[in-house]
Image 1 (cartoon, rainbow, N blue to C red):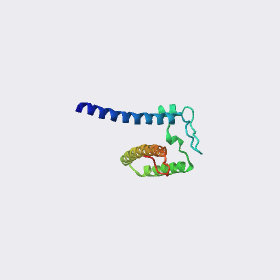
Image 2 (cartoon, rainbow, N blue to C red):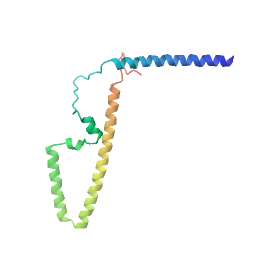
Image 3 (cartoon, helix red, strand yellow):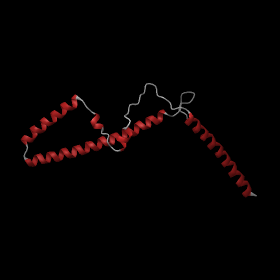
Image 4 (cartoon, rainbow, N blue to C red):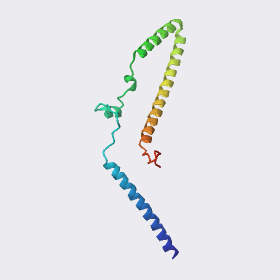
Length: 141
């Protein structure tokens, strides 16, 4: 008789869970049937082949960065390197180039990690912005 009672309790629990599941699936279906929300003042500009270019790794953010200040900075760097090169021996210049290479590798890695972190944070902000607000202005839980 105890087994029968346990089975009824389990079945009642499953029924309650099934009812909640059906309710949540209904909410998901309703949300999917609504037209996509537009964000006021936000326009999306992307070429038709953006995803293809992104997928194949053909997008280079550094190519999008332009500016007079960067060009001027590069000219300064080249000028200083030329001045330094004229004062160093061949062995000293080799050491300097090794130092530069290591610094560039480190900077590249820091930039890469910064990109990943920034991208993740941006996606988290987007997801946080999609959390519905309650009637009193608080986040729904």
